[in-house]
Image (cartoon, rainbow, N blue to C red; front, side, top):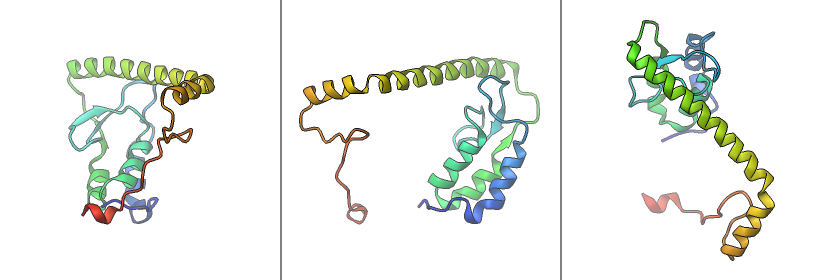
Length: 146
């Protein structure tokens, strides 16, 4: 369903999509930037990351048949949105940025305490197939699922 191509056949569509956002992309400390169809189940929403990240996600993880449609309709909002929606979105952005910063602080603390965390894990879960970065899971034969 998905593919391994970087941008390949979608290079032109990606370039057009990126061009539509030139000069108006997500900035955690900047003004809100609203776009249509960032996600298939949301009409309009504020960007929560650079648009290139979303495009990359679409290209690498969405079904090939969806990609041209998603890129075509992923667009900046040009008109004035209802004030109530903008106000609620601004509160959401502040909370989102605070969440991202707290997450980064948690990641830093986790790295700083890695030895202690690994020791506690080893004591509490002996024999766990954790390899230091992930839980090692058996590989499933994809054909067996079909």
